[in-house]
Image: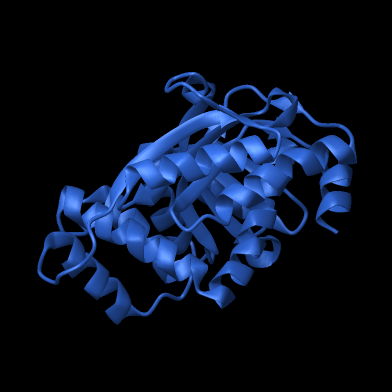
Length: 250
């Protein structure tokens, strides 16, 4: 899973560019609205909202912007009603793709996601075709100098973390979906600065992509999907060696 851990680290850096364009803010605000609508505006009682708000704060979304998003979600303020929808498909080389969207027009989004996949050498799949190849996990990213390996392991594993990966520039801590908040709180209590923490979908099996051409063709699909305004998250079960991934991203 080293290639996938490295990809999560690179995606975090890529998020800084998204933030500069305002795209990341828009996605986070939409996620907060939906979480508040589905589970209420109380952070203590709504774990999904608590996770989304923490993610927004990690990305420096202003507090008043977060508060307004929560109020739109609970109906205290007027706003567009978004609904969650997922899509499953394949990128080139048989790589499974799982896409999470929030949309106010399901028919439009479905057609556009299908078009993105097909024009980049992929295809749409039936519901359930690839979802079984992923499992929901928590993922915490820290700068490499935020803690020593011993200190990180002591704090994270004692709080229930499942794995710690060293990507060179960062530490990537994997947790169970329900343990994300507890592990993050434990790290912060140990005065370890967390860069980001979020729920994700990790592949249970991976497709190795050992050359640049194959890696580029798959990442082209991922990037094209992530550029769509309704797309919130894209998960894929590729495994690209670090040297190939570095060459492609360069």
